[in-house]
Length: 394
Image (cartoon, rainbow, N blue to C red; front, side, top):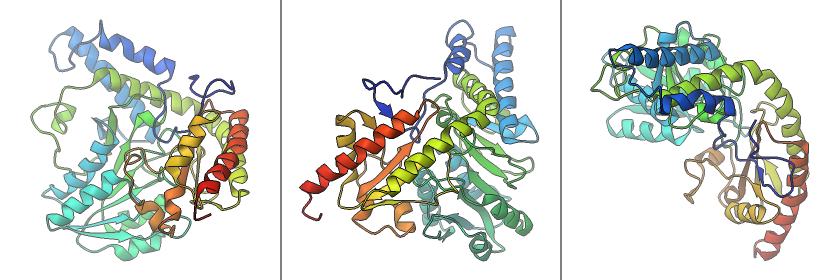
């Protein structure tokens, strides 16, 4: 375990693990040789190249095992979740075997899904955006009602990093499978954190991101079920069976595989550690005046707490927390955290203009302690009170 967040009052309480996580020492140890003495290109036709390829294939098996893929060949390595999401959408759109020009998604997707969807709309595709309820939960019946004979793909996030809600995607997947519509799941916030099985969820395409479960950044994967055809996003090489060109990022891929193996081994213990801390923080936040928890209270990630605060700007609140006894939290998504725009996710669950500017996200980690949660619950009310005293709206 890393020492990013401890109960030592000198050190900060880091609760922004929804943005990223540190690499575990075992992950770094596995990666290091592939930067130096084992630096070789997996496509090289000599023993050292074959050794690098063996390491890539071992990692592919570990990723496949973690998500229940039928074969390691269904795992395609990418540069990360953003590429995987883009590829799932654009790859289906560019496939000559697609069913039509209609896509279905939800109103709470990550920008790496919503932005490509908007681009596809500009190219003449149609997109249906399915609503969620006030708790941020998609109704599978709404997805069923949105399907058409020409639906080329349904793309849904498994759990939003803004509100942490775990969506009922097994039922959505069954509906899609029965209708013959390919189903893509953005599981970047769930794989490695909670149990996930591609077959039980009836997924055809799945996005995986290891830097959210103690693996490296700059690498990801797209699970592509055997028989599903997606047009290549990157061309010009034979890598990944010709499906994704570019020299393999061997150190990161090796780290990815090791993080998967560790997650498979430690997931139950991690969840047992995190859920009581999450619930304690949720209970404490709910007791604060003018603070509303966002997202379903129990149907959520084991390490996720989110809320909105009346009459307080989240930027000021985060600064106050960081400048006090050093608590590092977040607001909205890491990919748009520095952009002062309304959150489509909060808007989708009925958080009005003004209130959404006070959004907070606490992402707990494997090193988070009960003392850390206690510090947050001591310091958060103080910071809110100080800022409200300065607000003309309070």
